[in-house]
Image 1: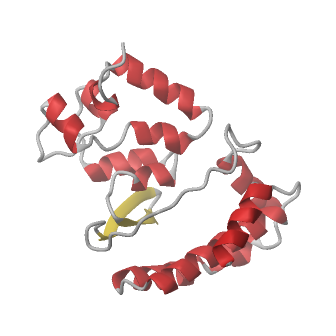
Image 2: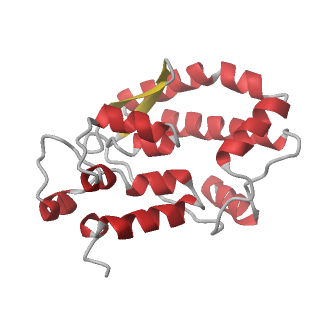
Length: 204
């Protein structure tokens, strides 16, 4: 029963796929419910004035992008920012997720390369891992305290189109996050040998 694209699948098929992927990643599942691409919009005859999502459309609901981002953010920050194009910034305001676009993708068209080092679900989910780190890692508090500084650096790099600065702060923040998890009890290690080879290759 699969149609030509996910945007024109029956709602029951779409939701079945969502539930299947949710077991591996909440963000991946929520992402399936997010932007309807131009082709999908035309196939569904959806108006351009209200950017819809598949689940909302199937349910006959009309919600603003901000409202949808807030709902998606309750499950995953990655899902919330997927509603916005380009470089998006997330802010937690009074327990609500507020997302804003710093730079449209057309304004700074970078290419992202993704290396898949392992398939299947994580041994420890992201939410559980972060909670373990919060409770047990001696580095957690200092990592949180410095988030605003890292965010400011990244924001300035994006606004100034400074790739070197953005790459440096993104890598630095990522390494700090993994250090927090490695120092947790029990240690949480998402990296594997392929991850290390990727890092080594990039540095050559």
